[in-house]
Image 1 (cartoon, helix red, strand yellow):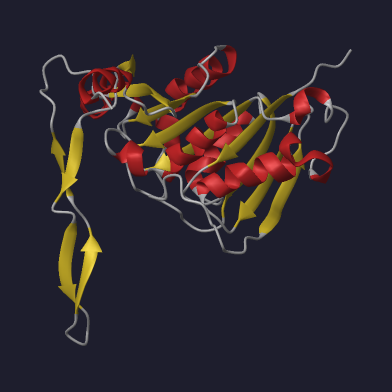
Image 2 (cartoon, rainbow, N blue to C red):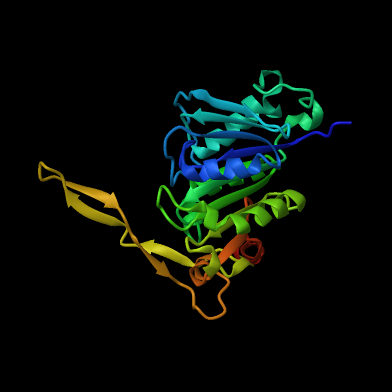
Length: 281
């Protein structure tokens, strides 16, 4: 009896043709069927943005089938990372019902939803406060909203052509642990890799979201006509003490791969209980 292959959804915010997503999809095809739906153009910093009131176009870029029986299908969408996840759920998997693009003998099982969502590998760190703005993590949060295990992956360099082989020996166990273990309802993982040679990576650490913020965020410039315009830049201000910190940006700077569990429920329950007592409304 043939077993149902794992269904893996992959997206990002750097675009379907970025090296990070290609490297990731190539590894994931060993674990199951991989469907890539990623933005056609770069969508960095889009967080949970949606393309409301705008047309979107979905284009199938390629389809491959491999000797292990798995397939890899790549789509490009003219939308945001969250649009990509929503499009996948509605047009490639079970949320779309009879309109789904993918149809095979397993299509009736479990509503044919992905078993896991991976977003990345993002070019650029999503540690600390960057996680709030990240399109990579916006897509991972959207996967968690659908009740699917979801993992965002980033490397701490904006180089469009980094050597991802330096992190492969750490990426593979994170993929396998994410596949085999329960993450938690409404939880998604934020994984950040330092962009250093593999022999300098100390190991993998569970971490918290680092405490920091961006300051001096705009640079004032003049266009050729002498008119002022502004360019977003910014300097990162660390708000954590370095000793014994488990903040992800601190640990990554020390040479660790960091893993932070985030929740889509952002309610501060301790403050909620205090407000119930103090506000007396």
